Length: 62
Image (cartoon, rainbow, N blue to C red; front, side, top):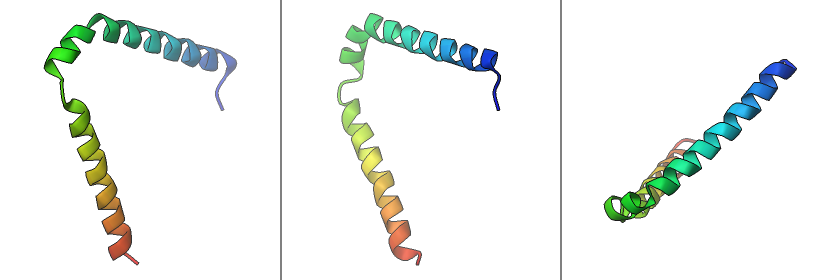
């Protein structure tokens, strides 16, 4: 499906992207702690809400 060159490029791209994201996050960690306090609870609430929607859909739709 993919050539060897495409697979090598994809692997290098993913690796570089992850490294850059880790570097950026580490650089801004003090700002994250200051401005995004409590965002984990919002993520948790959103995840629970979506899970409840799927549960409700499977319960109501036979």
